[in-house]
Image 1 (spheres, rainbow, N blue to C red):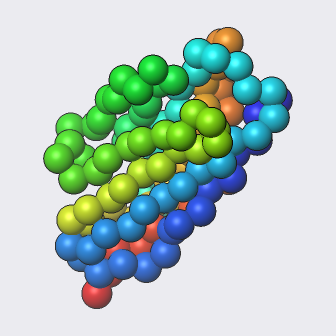
Image 2: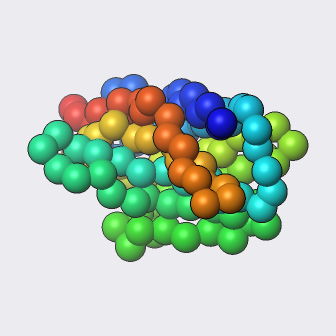
Length: 115
């Protein structure tokens, strides 16, 4: 089992920035991939970004150039730096961990983009 705990969400004005963090613990194997998804009210959960143990990153087209995903393998942490946030990106952001055919999810952290 892998446990994931997100932090760093909150209220930010349009155009502002936030940095999300996710701490993974438990039976962590390499290689693995960690990532972020988000779910806005009334919408399905959607992919935001992912990063492998080796550092390969993938982004949703909607966040390219504004969001940066990174990880610290020694600490089993993944981060999401979000810049130039838009009101429509208000959502619960979930951390995700994939290894050995299993996917694990955190409880989510709320991000609200509003003036």
